[in-house]
Length: 427
Image (cartoon, rainbow, N blue to C red; front, side, top):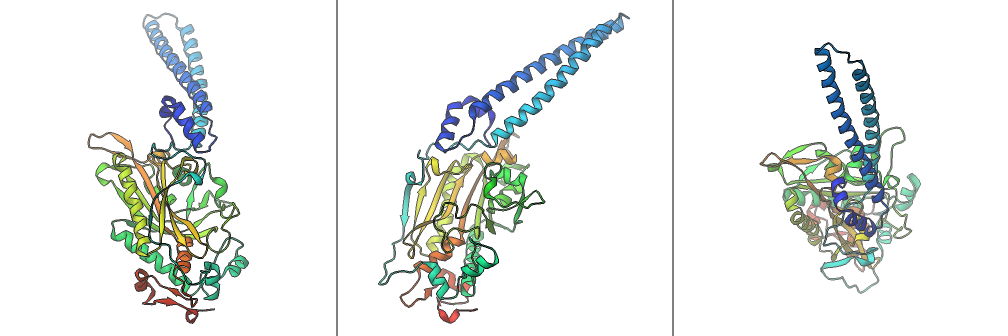
């Protein structure tokens, strides 16, 4: 959430941000309501001053045993006006807050202006695109042949947009999760095992509500949502808290399933595991001092890159333009890994800095050494998404014999297994 004072003092900057993010938030409407709110406050202050003056007059007249009836009636009338204005003020503030919740974050000055992902900028590339003496197969073909992936069974049980990993496929995913958690915790991230359901207050805090309500699964009879990312419960750990400055920075890591209704809505990447309604993800969250948030953003990006480099998968880092930036994001890098079977890069991680946007919504602050209170900055990044990483390993590590070589970093987590072949096929 943006501070209303910031919007009032920088209206054109905010309007440009809304436009550049392809959003339609009504900034003029907010400013009109803010003007109305300040007018009501001024009226109330004048009436309260009048009420105090009349009250003193009543006291003086009573002391002199003079008739104060007219003054008492006048004070009652003033009190009724104040009550009426207070009601108007509450209603106006509720309307303003509702509109503020729909205003996107302002992009950082280093974010390129652009309408869509075509305007994103490649920051760096790592690794060499593998060359094969055969035509690489997509992961859904490899998975079916080796008994690792069962899409028809998932469709039968649940519907389209879901997958089942079996045998060595399920083991590969579990190995990746454990490898990532071990890597991140060794680097100082505290592991969290959060609930997979979150209430509307938590969803509002991180910016999913009210803007993205249609993208989430909501329980019919309760104020609970299936989490779209571990970012929601983990970042909300410190909602409505004032942290001591010395506790910053805070680093968290969590593995959870993620649930998203919008999967496949664009009509692309609908085959296999690439774009699904439920997937596993390891998420990294940082809560930091505002003065250090962009340094922390760069190191968070490096933390996510560390996983992909350890698995020796080629990737590129892309700086998102304003039109591709999320509602809550101030700046975001995407990490895209190469997938040989589909012959293209696929996003596997988004590493975002939200500055104080989420913190204002969550009321998460810190107290400095001078006892002054400030909003923290929040950051998060996928570290990483399994529905893209598992296919990347299947496709990039496939052999001409139809087997999958296990990356060296994962072999200790696979019981020393070096290759997945039809021998591991189960079911």
